[in-house]
Image (tube, rainbow, N blue to C red; front, side, top):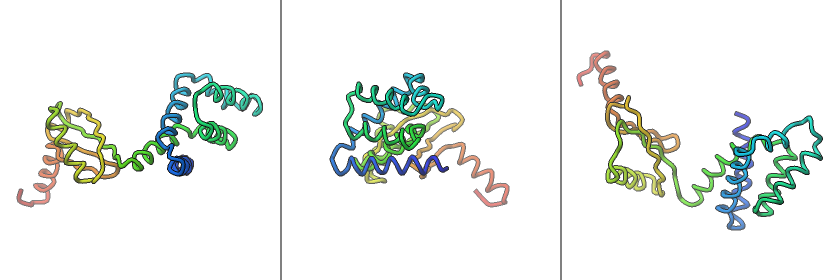
Length: 183
């Protein structure tokens, strides 16, 4: 839980800078690229995070890599700050939170649509349009399949879950019957 608070704090700080200088989207791309580098080159991450090497040596390696990347001075300073504060290990969580904040800044909300079967493009677009009207924001909808739903769809937008699956309807009906209610 503490790590999420730390990640949120750094992501908020970076989004504030991005909002002030109008570079929030650029910082998103640069942060994502740096996280992608760490994922693609795990030995680099090991070198800069291994306390067996001196801090000066690890910082020289990090600085050399940052200088080779085509990223802004703000992002170089941000990553260097994370290193100096021993927070570089949180960078993936920071990236996740930053993406959410950058989406909010652009008026975008991400949602997940789970269905029992593949939806037609028309159905998918109708659901996306309905969610856009419901939220008042542009909805980026990710589709997933779950045959256990039997039918219908389940939509998640942040903490909000809209469950229209047959599985849930059957479960609710079973609970009603157990309590002796009429269906």
